[in-house]
Length: 534
Image (cartoon, rainbow, N blue to C red; front, side, top):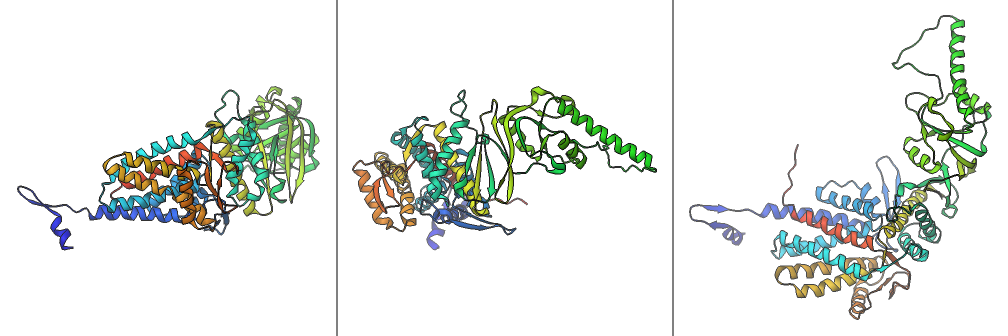
């Protein structure tokens, strides 16, 4: 204490000034420790042998998942710096879709090394600049390791999708889900814009019952609801002419809330008759265009359909699917290649979509409506996911989303890289060699960050119950001998050429994990005080 007190006062010409840096160090340390705690929480769920987390939400729901982004999203993190790691996994989820656990684990390891470097008395800005150089160099090294892949090479795409699925709860179904994800993405790629895949064009419909084996892609549309059975309307329609309507087939209401008092029966009959005529005239206009399937958007202001209108629609042999969600309208119209109709006056034949078959089928304990054989179908696809219980169903959907994202990454950046900790060890080796070329503080920082990247293979081995020390040392030796695709084969519990074992991942997942993790760590380093504002 005395020595620090002596060191702190600086003698200047006129006054003694006392500079206290203790608080800034404390804030930085607290931030780094909080962020590392979050990283350690998800570290055990990295890799194919990683553990799953059971998340119990406030309202009593239970979620079982292995997906880093989901775990962190549901965790209620209060410390501001730790929140940055949650955002980090979200941004990795948006950029690449897979590697959400990896990115947090790497950030945690880099932060641990930052603490060591800070304790050596190196200024945070110097550490931050070195880290920036490391991330640029790392992307170059990874790009040099990668191998190009063509979209026509379906096997490679399926391999990378199944690698992504291997670490999930539903990994035993990866042989079914991986090809399904590849076909789904390839079917929505637009030849005019071959690098862009919009995952909103792939709709995932979940239906309880059956097992994950029953999951299938549907060339067409699937609705997780039944057709309206009021008054015995049709439940199957061949040569369907489909209209998507956004208006209500029900008697009009007044604009403001008011009650109308009717004193005698003749007037009451007149009102009912008017209502009937109003609805009938609408249905006649609909029938005149030859339309025989109606998809009706959910309405907030008044009932989209009444019993009376359903009765007349059933008489007119029109199949009705009601309560279509508003945000599904865009997907439906794109698939059916038709236009949504907002007003009965605009109801024309050219706004309809055409399909060979619309039918209701029973699935599990519920019913679904399938529309197949659509003419001039837009570039969309639907996936019907099944599962024996809600937990498996939700996890299957999340895993499928990750697999779709992996294929999307390959479409936008067509390079593959080995998995199983191989790229991280290679990075660590090359950065270590690069550190020897650099001078001064930078060299010191880069050396430490190179060591930090070994956390991925170390964790993979640890989660698989292997001896991490021997595995990582052996890996390092093999990479020094120039075997750059050597990684940890978790299934066999030894070190093999990962490329031959078909454990591959898109380059984009690795590069974005490194760049996003370094960016996040640099931000945390630069913070020297937390100001709370009431």
